[in-house]
Length: 226
Image 1 (cartoon, helix red, strand yellow):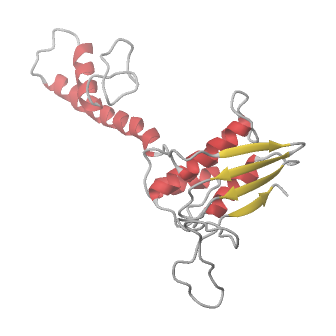
Image 2: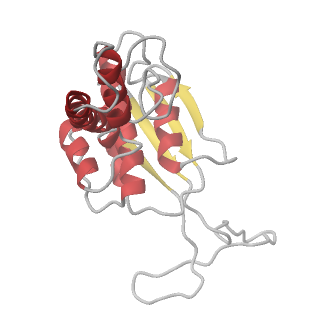
Image 3: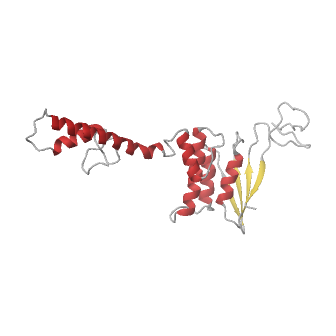
């Protein structure tokens, strides 16, 4: 958008030192022949024209940011979702950005020669980490010959959109690969007891018929790729 050699600024990729209107007005004045007086109708007209063009430049520069995952909001995110094939499905803007980043990762991984292939260990771990967010709890992945793996995902507290993660992982794995995903959704007190020895913090079994106060929440395994 700008010329080489301009001072670096915040509003333009190549360093315009002012917003578009000011820059365009100054540019028109610098291009007029020197015999036009400082205060003249011709200078005023060119400045007004330059400001109009500069305003359009500001709008054009802002457009890529408006539809970038990190900056888009509301309906702008919905447009991005329609492009990459991932509906919002009730997610908040913050959560939807995370899901869109994963979907974009999948698409680029399949399309770029220099990116991780969709079924690699790095890509699977990256998808899960993006989904659950940063944290000290490790994500485990063990390859099981000939074409299987066991993926352990810890500290899942909100299970409302786990089906979305399963869909991401299903898209990521190779067609002949079977994955076993172990979701460690267990909360405090969800530890198996024993008839032989005392187990501190042993969980309480729930019931399908009645509400059991303090009932444990157990982890579970999901098979993908079959």
